[in-house]
Length: 243
Image 1 (cartoon, rainbow, N blue to C red):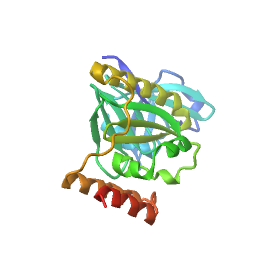
Image 2: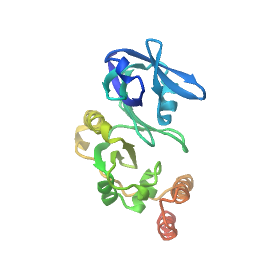
Image 3: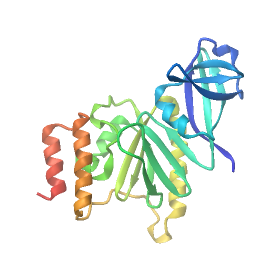
Image 4: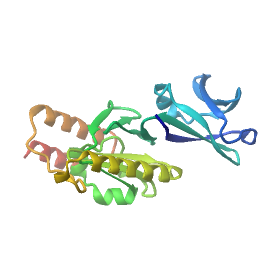
């Protein structure tokens, strides 16, 4: 199976000019942190948000992609899958399924890729598209949307009954666009011909007891994170309960 770029890690290094493209990179724990090495020499400390990803992906292949000034760009490659590591978690496309692994909080979520649409938008564009109600009912609960400044980039994945938004660094924008394209291509090939075309948010059907509890828990998480005011929380709660 060919290797696919999963993510790029920018590592600040006092000795950056000692490294060159294509050098193999390994990761080791040092003093409670994860550090990158090439040819036995330390490159520098790995940003903490990549730690869980690197520990989990033991079969990943890493190498130096480029060196600019005092920054070494390390590409991490995986077999038979496409993914991106954002600020609030990892998004993975594999075997016609798409998974979101949050950096903290709730566990991983896996969905079928059929009927899914992906796009890359700014924080302002995201806010204009997604209402508080949709945040609560569709499942955008992995980050505090209201607290974003507006100049970020988000890889947004929308399905019939869910929506995720993964915040990416500006230098990951092209990587995010490529993954969005791969998701859309996979979704088109997975969907029956009669259902071809872009996916849209579905209005939630009458939920069973467990669904309502799940939605309320997600709503409470948003409020606890400071993403919702008391009024917004109350309005969304009434909608979930059908009041």
